Image (cartoon, rainbow over all chains, first blue to last red; front, top):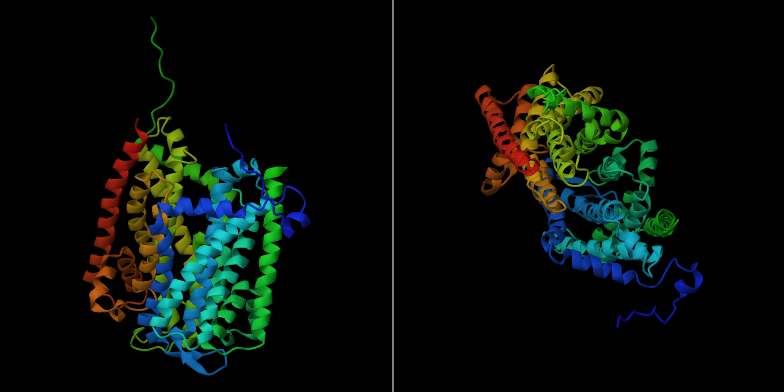
Length: 276
Length: 268
């Protein structure tokens, strides 16, 4: 006799407001699957925590001796390594989320046909989107904690506000993984992965990660201010230095809107790709 | 009983490899736009950000040999870009040829041999590396990144650096049977640290003596020295020869391993 699990009894708000079939309240099963996949590959999983550490080391040893001080968020000079550290955390949260929600998702979507199989069961596209994003930000959150511990040990954090960098990293992860997931559904072949790098690397290089915004001429400053990573970095840098300002609310709102739009778009795209 | 005479020609030693190159070219003609990033654009972006942006904060000093930071990193970024491109092109794409797209298997069902499949990959990669180097060198010209006519040799130094990375990576990819999880580790623990600590952005004398030998092992450090030597000088003739010899040895060792791995995997 085969026992079949009944759908969850307690229908939440999402279940009532969304069109039927979009959401079944089983997003956590996708997270569970990811945990099982990585159970045998914990080395790969942990290696993500080492990467920002290597960057910090490079800045401590090399770049920091080329440039000792730069203008901080309040215009006063601060040590270069402390300037870069929060930006590296924002970047690593972005990279981790995008990697999980693009390259990995692409293989599951196109080659492994994982979601075709899943959607044949009582699981909806929103479950898939929520589950994958949930996993991506869990991973990002663990890396953020590791990074923060290393940065604190190196004496790069100036305030207790820095503890808020962990939830901030989760938000950054949510925003980027949701948008990345929506966009990767348009990718047709692995050669187009170059486009992902084409979006990430310029942001990594130019969104005030390595040098302050004041380096740019005025019109370019406005272009940089439109980049999502810029807002993530501003948020992190404000928290790491404890120099809070009202503009950080704008950074926060930008990331929240990005995450919301991404979640909506990725659900729509998965439903369109796989259910029609 | 009648004997049937074969009408097919068995392809020549080089011809088979060139047929592969033609195949890549047919693909490239349709998809070149999507590969612009890895073909020259990536090092250009790094040059703009680090050379101009970060460089604006750097005072020319003893660390950069009295040069502006832009001049200091321009040749090294070409070598670093070539190394990254080389590893990228020989990891997942090679595994895919065996495993996902299986075009290597398809091709070896024709008179093209596994060795020629690998040779085609090498020739094509060398052409792509040179193209990427040339595009980078040309764009960097407008940044004012070059101090002399050594530029043309820098392009060559980039190609040599890339080739020294291609063969070991392709050998590893040809021996990979899982989904290529180890490539992620290679990018993280070999390529990334290599880019950061091989004298690209700052001289390796900044590193503690205990870990400096790690930089000596990396092909990129030798490539960087070669590229700097031909463009801004400061590296002796014998030292240049030594750097070139290391890269050539890496290429040869990787070639032998990859060649054998291709035969093992493709000959049934």
